Length: 253
Image (cartoon, rainbow, N blue to C red; front, side, top):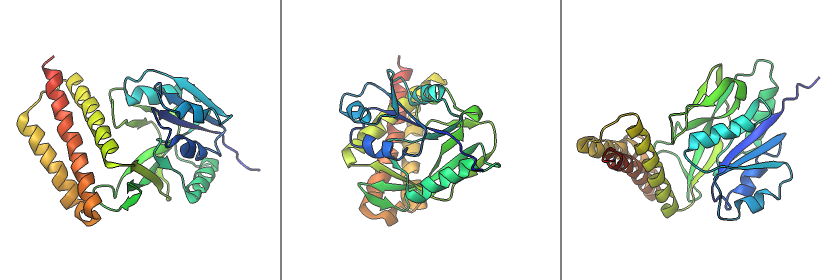
């Protein structure tokens, strides 16, 4: 007898009209799909409403963790598949997910390794080699840590596994939008550090920014990714610089 397991697909959105149709298509095997939207001003919700099995919750954005935990709270199934708008599931990964949750000895949470793309061109290095995130997990065994405003961290109270097939991550559609994304993330991270009592230091700001670029471009072989590798490593370092600029601003309040 087949051990059918129901899965809830979750996603948080804000102005994802370019991605929403494709990413919702990745949830085609899920029994329930929930979107937590931060009051998008584009056609995100209009497109989402074309999918009959999608539940939409609108909630004012404070930080990524709160949005994710709200989505979790509304899921009716224990198994959760949580995707970002710029992520895509391949047919082999889809099959692996379905087979994995059926196993009697399934783990409580699974890491997905991600294949990174910059303007639709694959990135093989630049610190992306070991990029992985929890994307499939049991709701009863996991929750996002509340004091993380960006780069949300899933706390798992159980067993952990890794799926073999990679998730496709189209993180950079164009240079300028990714730059703005890094600036937004840096600002949120700076606020997070300030709330934890961290104090701004000029030497720390510049040394950490430089080391981040050196690590991703040289040590993590970003130089082998050519022009796109250089741009990606610069933008990742910009995130670090902006984090400390935001921290400095928060310290002055």
